[in-house]
Structure formats: C-alpha cells, structure tokens
Image (cartoon, rainbow, N blue to C red):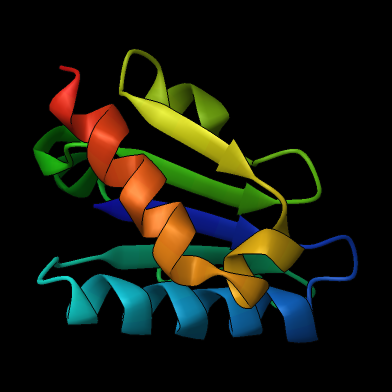
Length: 102
C-alpha cells in the first residue's frame, strides 16, 4: 500500500494521519509507504517503482494532491485526513477491499 497524506495547513494533521495509517497498516500485516505533502513540501516522496508495486493508493487529504497524475489507473480510495486519524483501521480495511477488486 501507498498513501499520500496532506491537510490544508500541512503541519499537524498530515503527520498524525501518517502515523495512524502506518500503525494500522502494520497491525494488519501490510507494508505501507506514505508521502506527506504540506508546509515542509513533499517528504518521503513516492517513487514510480513504489507506485507501480502498490496494490492500492490511500489519499488521506484535505487539499489537492501534487503530482496526482502519477497514480492514474491505480486503485485508490479518498478519505478526509480526520477520518484517517480517528479510524485508521476502517481506512485500511476499505483500502484492502479496493485492492482486492483488481
């Protein structure tokens, strides 16, 4: 799995969503790499190989995603940043289902 996390201010919630999704993915046995986009710019940028190898993309965002065209054609889900923080397991489960559809 891969994800992009970004909130309007790009400070606290972006990283809170990243941490919550990483923990939830790990507890369900998934590898996940998360790119953050915010006040610090793009961090932990996803490579084309990361995108190619991913089963599903989780967009936990409240703003437009920079470079969204990189993910064209990949199964994806879109959730609000707050939802990823409040119930990351539900987000991971939704991503699992989306990834299985392919």
